[in-house]
Each structure stands twice: as structure tokens, then as C-alpha cells.
Length: 192
Image (cartoon, rainbow, N blue to C red; front, side, top):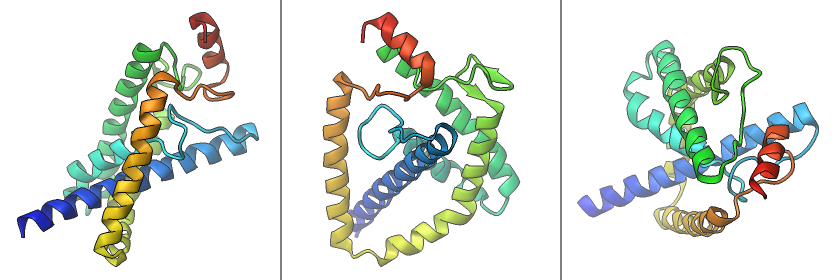
């Protein structure tokens, strides 16, 4: 019985991670498509996922699920938690590759261009939506997938992700428009 519970928790959270990472990628691609009128594959990786959204979403699910009857509290804690995650991720990526994948320097109430009030608000709303509304929907969809398919999907997604992460550890996605002119300047300065 314990083995089945552990497997359930593993596939539940792996599939949730990839669903949230894909939703985050769709959000960012759509945002840039409507603002810049161009398709831009956002993020460090080549695949259609942004792991920061998966990690942030799982963090919110683990920490805030018990508060889902209080959307205002979930909103505030989501805004705070996701802003800290975004700041630390931006800092790490810049240390690792010397490049910023996003820069909020021109946004109102930004902190070192890594986070801003608008981003925190959007993450707060997204976190409240995830924890209070979308998680029950995910649970129903998850329960409809046969057990063997859950394991197969997890393995396929993980293998693709590991291959992508391995490749991008050496060759990160720095294509045109990833972070606007800031990225282009940084790439020129760093000899990319």
C-alpha cells in the first residue's frame, strides 16, 4: 500500500509540474505574441515549458492548499512567494550565464529589475486561481487517467525534459527576442 501511495504522489506532482510549466509557457508566448506581434519561445529551455512556473505552482500547492477557502490570503502569499522565486531565479540565471531573461527596470516599483509590482500582482492572481479553482479541476482530470498512462506520461515528459536541460545547460535558449534589447546587449558583451 505504501508503494502505491508514493507512486501516486510522484506521478501526481510530476504531471502537475509539467502542466503548470506548459501553462506558464503558453501565458508568456501569448503575452509576447500580443504585445510584440511575434512568436518567441520564452525561457532557457527549447521545449514548450517554463520550469519556473512548475516549481512556483508546486510551491504554492504544497504551502497554500490548506488556505484555499481564503482567496485573499492565497493571493497575498502567492504574490510574495512567486516574487521571491522569480528574484532568486533571475539572480541564479544571471550568475550562471551572465544573461537576464527578463528585466523589469522600466516597470513601476521594481526591485533591481528582477521583480515588479505588476508581476507580483499577476502571480498573486495566478496563485489564487491555481489553488482555489484549478487544483480541484486538475484533481478530477488526474483521476480519469489510467494508472499505467500516468507512469508512461511521467517517464516520457521526464526523459524529454532531462535531454532538453542537458543540452541547454551548455546551449541555453538565447534566441531573438527572448528578453529584448537587454539580452542582445548582454550577449554582445559576453561574446555569444
